[in-house]
Image 1: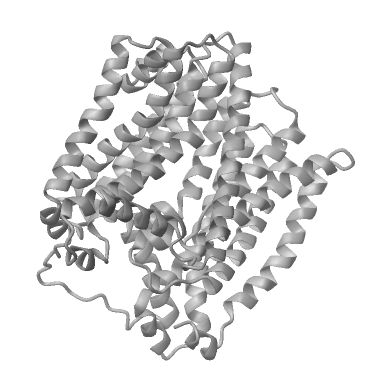
Image 2 (image 1 turned 180 degrees about the vertical axis):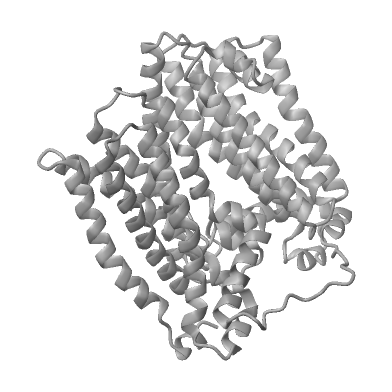
Amino acid sequence: MKTFLNLVKINLKNSMYSTMGNKKRNAYSMIMIWGMIIVYLAGIMSFSAYTQAHVLLAANLPISSLLLQGALPVLLIVFIGAFFGMQQYLFKAKDYEMIASLPIPTYVVCLSRITAQMLIYFGYSLIFFLPYAITYCIYSTITIGTVLMIVLTILCIPLFATSVAMILSLCIQSIGKNSTVVQYIRVFIMAIVIGLLVYLYMTMSQSSSSAISTTLFYTQWIVDSITHPLSLATLWFVLSSVFPFVFLLYMVSHFYTYLYGYFNRTTKKKNKVPDSVCSKSPFQALLKKEWLRLSTSISYLTNSCMGLLLLLLSPIFVYFTFPKGAMDTTMLSIILVGIITYALALNSPLVISISLEGNAFWIAKSIPLSPTYILLAKTVLQLVLFLPIGLVATLCLSLVAYLPWYLVCILLLYTVAMVFVITTFALYCAKKYYNLSYTSEIQVIKQSKAVFFHVLFGMILSLVHILLLIWLSKYLAIWILLLGISILWLVVSIPLLIHQVKITPQQLNNML
């Protein structure tokens, strides 16, 4: 048991502040950053739960719909994390050989990794589901059974999402890790899951919770088990959550060594013709390398472009949450500014692109090419992704919010400005907080120091813009404020971005 707890502690430490080093000062810094992020997210969820409760009461809809609205984000986040991360976390760890050489049973290693990830998933339940559950308790009659079922639900929802995601991931990965079909299948499944959750949110805005729950049995059991404890729905909810997870836990831990070897096999490719890059310029070759790395790594793609996905889905949320005439144009524009800024700054491929070079970064250093082109290729890839997708999402947001044409144009300009600002800061973090000795791809994508500072910057930037616009909108029209902020950021960020891209050979040499 002591060995198991020590391994769990090590895995949690690597996940929470792996790049901060072992100094207590750095550990305290990471704890403060995590605390700020948790408080920020919990505040958003609490405000959203309070707002939705009043919307449901005003529309004479059951307050139990809050339970679904809190459970769905947990299901989505845990499913994405387990579907793209758990399998790689278990079977792609670079320190497996070292740990396997120690006198520790392999099932203990496996269980410690799963336990560490599940503790993080339970944290997601507390942040996203608990505020909605507390709001539900405030506006409805509760019993001891209701409180116990809320606690049990917080524990069970991650179990169900992890089990489904892991079973699907293991089945798909058994086809072959280098198969292009695998990538398409995983993207297709993610599209189905996200589409289903969007459909449930749309249904929640139009009908009662009973109509919603019939869409998916599991969501029906969540609501019924809390609103009617000790019912048949409680039994089905617990069994559907616990039994698949226990079965998966036993099978994976029992055959951990075999599965690790199986999923680390290499696919033989016959008559492979190497891609010719002789006809391309050196910059085109570098840009193609960055694109292939992003498009062929599903973990890299989903984690670094999650903000773009949320931005594309945000028009659906705005359309059903803020119907026409429900809010004045000024406040609605401020809300859209917060959504655009936060989604664009959630993460980016650029912020971790240098760290992903790993110990092979010396190859880039040895290329007979100006070091500036190396950073320029990484920067151009982000701009090519973020600019068109951001503009399309902003246009859709403006249309569903029924904003006047001049505000639509200014919001598009604001999106361009934010893309350049976020790209500039992402490149700064990538150059300053790189880590070329990570133990897994997931570590540098999710838990690197650069990612934390980048996400924190996005939160602060969106919050500052919202508060500034709320304050100044009393004195000036919203379109004047947005136009001024956009032009100011463009004037500041573009020269800074050009400066960040420029790098000397000596500076590049010092990075390894």
